[in-house]
Image 1 (tube, rainbow, N blue to C red):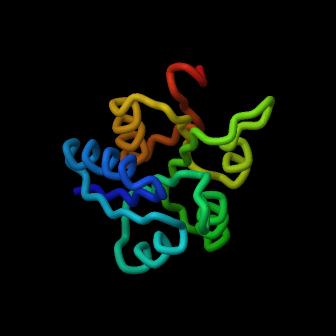
Image 2: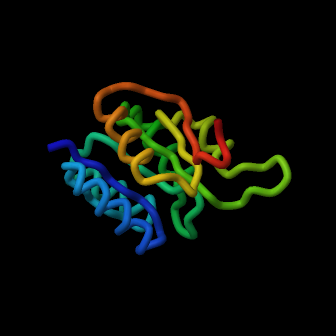
Length: 135
């Protein structure tokens, strides 16, 4: 069974993602920040890391930077719905660090599960987004 690590400080949202992935047949591990995610990864190998970008402690930017610095080839899905002012999009700095894919919140759960499936299968889309925000 493929496994996914979900990293998000919003517990209800994380549980929603977990439920959708479990219904699709994935094993799921959860963390509420990047530091806990790194500890879990040391103990539990996973097939994909899904991380929110904006978190109050050890955010997704730090997590992606750490994973890529240590040469983890693990597929990473960056997601964010935060801070979108003017021309600034919170996903922009994350994309420069090399996640495998990105998705903008809000997104349809079917779109999210399908994207995780493509990453598990080794298909590497660079970005995707909500039906409202990205093409």
